[in-house]
Structures are given as structure tokens and as C-alpha cells.
Image (cartoon, rainbow, N blue to C red; front, side, top):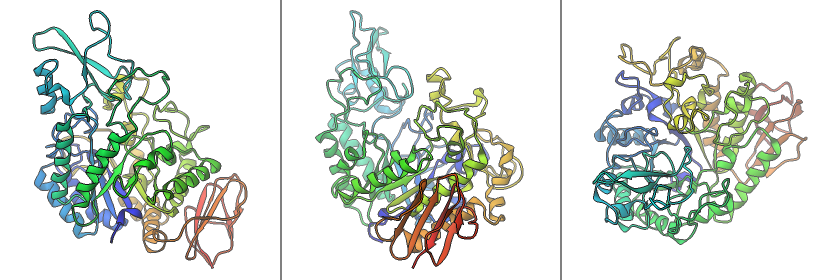
Length: 537
């Protein structure tokens, strides 16, 4: 199908936590290949893999040591090629992460830069600068890392003296690449071709807004504001070049941007016929359980994307975000701000589950493409009580344990059985899962939910099927009159979605039948925290 990405249902795979094929406690490509039938039966159109490249795993693979190979813990390049081919035979497309903002500090380029000395061509691929102050002991500017602490680290020069500083918007083990450098641009153009040649259908571009910096590297005057990225022609040029590469391949290769530009109006500037195809919708991702906020974000998203002819995207969770069941079940604030200041807030899991199921139907009913993160279809919640000594996210250490990090949404999936590892690892595995699974997940395994009528997995499978058959290609969204606290909209032909975010049951609008609901209606009344899909006259 031409332009499949406009309406696709895309499943995010965090490989380390999907399934372990060899018993070492870490998910791998063999584990993914063993469950392609599960993904096919779930009904997704594509899968998106977080980085599968060789990496020290300081940041879960986003510290890439080699962009043209596979992390040995996950498997081999021939295995990845076989996985892509097998997915295609099942009608599933494959999107992979690319990380152009930075690499690992053990990448061959950075090792060469560290040893080459100030002013060298090797250092010009990165952001090396002398420090401030009479002895250069102060960072070149006041930028802060998104993982906590300064965004600069000082190196020791080859002669043993204190030397220059290098920029890293994330961990100090993730030096930022300098996109003013032509070698960097040429290298990534070749990396794109490498993966497209192997059948990859698209790229999700990590930190797509942060690649191009202001060359002056000025201080930040507003500590709560964004870093002074260059939101100008440089980024457009990169994406135009990448789009030319993608369009040179058959089958509609796709470029998806992860962009934090502050507002949708700025983001859609990069969604053009000759630039990015789509971008992640973070406004929707972090929205609290609030009908007015949801409606405003939906309206703004549809309107802004409509001005450039790009499809909206909708996503409730990913590998960096507290899972929806936990967010929506919290007392008080049900949103998310990436600092996770709400960690440990009391959670009503029953309430959170009801709301997460309703949010899933809302999301799948909207026009455009939608993403779901592995485990979302099982109704899993954030694991917040991981022992400190087992946490692996660098955010935990870099913030002095103030931020617990993102491990809680990355706990390995439960597949079968009544005790850990719940089928995540094969029988006789020689290591436990890399993060501990709670024993109460026994009722939430794939095996258990396939046998349970009305389970969250059954809801997702039904919703994805109906979405593919009659919702994805439906007409524009049209709001319906509804009581306060209720979102109701129609899409021709003959489809309506109603989501009750109020505290009282509300009557359903005129309809011929209920196609699907996140919880059982009571007659023609829709209970609180429930969504329904209707076949309408």
C-alpha cells in the first residue's frame, strides 16, 4: 500500500526486554523472531526497534559504537537481515532507530579524536572546545545534560595534561557529533543507504531536533528553556538530503522524527514532501487524564498537521515514559514531565487500568498513525520498587538518585507461566532477566490473557483489527455534542468514538451497535473512565 505510514499501527520493540532466545537474561533477535507470529496476530502494520547496534549499553543502546552492525548480545547482522525478511513475509514492516546526535565514547571516531589533540580534523567531528577561566577549568558554557549535571566533560590530553572539553547533551559517554562537519553528513548518508539496502522500511530519528547547534554555543539565559539549537536551514538541509536517499528506494521508505521544539507549529515545519514524513506527538504522550487537555491537543495536532498535509501521530507510552496504567492511576497529577517527580505517588492500579484501556481506544480511533509500546497491550504498569542496586539507567546515578530513571517501564515482558521469568527466557536459562519481574504479573502474561475473555490483550487485538478494517482509512474527525467531561467524535462512514472522562455514567449517542468498548456499558449508559466504539447510522 502506498504511503502505508499515514495510517499504520506501529509496535515499539525494546529488544533487551522483549524476549530472550538464548537464556542469558537479555532479550535478543532470536527472541523477537520467535514471536513474529504473536505480532502478526496482534494486528500491527510495522515494528520499530530501539537501537540494536554494538554498544557499551551505558544508555540502553543509544550510545552507539558502530552504526553498521548488530550488538553481539542481541545477535548478528545476518540474523537481523533474516528477521527483516521474515517480518515482511508476515506483512510487517520494520523501522529502526538511528541516533545522529551522538555516538558512544568507544566509537572509532571518538577514540581517534581523543588521541589526536586540539585543532585536529578528528576533533572537528565533535564539539571540542577549550574551557573558560584562566586555567580552562570551567565548562565552555552553562548547558546542562538532559541526564543531569553539566553537558561538558573535560578530557586528559595525550601528554597527560588537562585538556579540552567535549559536549554531550546526554551521558558523558555519548559525545555529540558536529553536523557542521561534512564528514559527519557523508557518514550518516552512507549509514542510511546501508540499512535501506538491507530492507529496512523506515528510520525513527532520535533527538531529531538537536543535531544542529548554534555554532557560537551561547550560554542559556533561561534555565528552564530549551538549549539554543539552530532551528534554521541547517536542519532542513539534512532532512532534504535524507529524504532524497529514502525516496530513491522502492516501497515507501519512511523518516520519523523525535522532536522537542516546544510547540507543534515549529515541529510541522520539518514535515514536508521533501523532508520528514512524520514526527512523534509528545504533547499527546504526556497529556494527563483531562478531557479539555485531550481535546485541545487533538485539535491542535490535527490542525497543525493539516496545514502541511502530514499525518498526525498518536502515542501513549515508550521506553522513556512511565507506563499509562501507573500515570492514569495516580492520585492528583496524571501527566508526565520526563523528570518523573511523581515517582512513588500512590497509584490505584484498577483505576489506571480502566483509564489506560479507554485511552487505547481513544488513540486508535484518531486519524493518522499510532504507536504502541511493548507491554501496553498487556496492561502492564510501571515497576517502581526496583532495588537501587539493580537499576541500570544512567539517569539514576547522574541525578544522585533523585530521578529513578526509566528502568520501571523496561522490565522484561511476561509471556507464560506462573513465576518469573514468565517465559521471557527459555527453560534452563543460565541467568535471570536483566531487570526483576514482579510475581503478580502471573495474571498478565500473554498466555493468561489469551485465555481470559475481556483481557487487555483481547481488547488490543480486537481494536487493531477493527481499526484496520474500518477506522484507519475513515474520514476526518468531527466532534459530536457531548456532556461535560466526555469526548465524542465521528468519522465517516458510520463510526463514532465516545470516551467518558467524567465521574458519572453518560448516555451513548444514537447508534446501531457497539463495535467495541473498553469496559461493559450498562444499557445505553457509558460508565466513567470507559470508551466505546459505535457503528452509527
